[in-house]
Amino acid sequence: MKKDWKTLYQNLPEGELDKIAILRVMECTNGIIQYAHRDDADYKLPIEETRKSMKFSMSSIKNMAIPLDNGTIEFAPESQELMREAREYYVSGVKKGVDEDYAEFMKISEVTAQVCGLERLVNAVKTLKENQSEIPSRCIVWGLEYLLQFFDDEHLRNFFGPKGIGGLPA
Image 1 (spheres, helix red, strand yellow):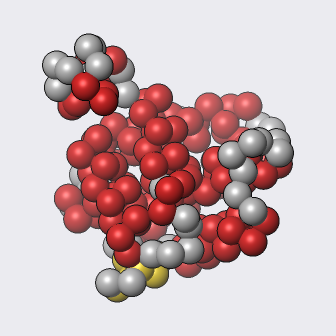
Image 2 (cartoon, helix red, strand yellow; image 1 turned 30 degrees about the horizontal axis):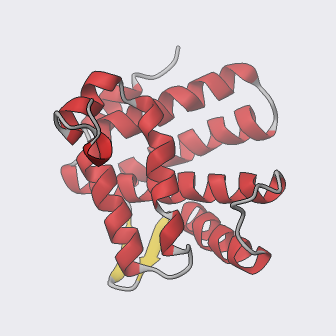
């Protein structure tokens, strides 16, 4: 029986959700940086920046601590357990190709984005831009852009207001 990820994440303290939002933006940004490199995309970073970004992100995920200029973000044990489980689904589903585990990982990704909410995710972009130099500042928003797929149009309109993103009509 699969877990009720939404309830598990909703039961975390607000401060833990702030931290998870930072982690999710960081790791999604890292994923895009890696895919850009592998796919030889026109927006890929130079190899040195790619390696530096990957090292920072992967080290943070493995150590369950994000070293920032203004202090290290450390996660409570219950958050660490949830993140370990998500990572296991990621490795099995994405790296090993187990479809059922990939689907579960995507459920967890959706839940974490939605439970954290857009305001936290936007704040996470700001935090990462202002408090670290391992991932190029211009790239941090890529993680947020990826996470937007987990929000429906109505939710996005409500967040960005009646004029939509960039002042364009919604």
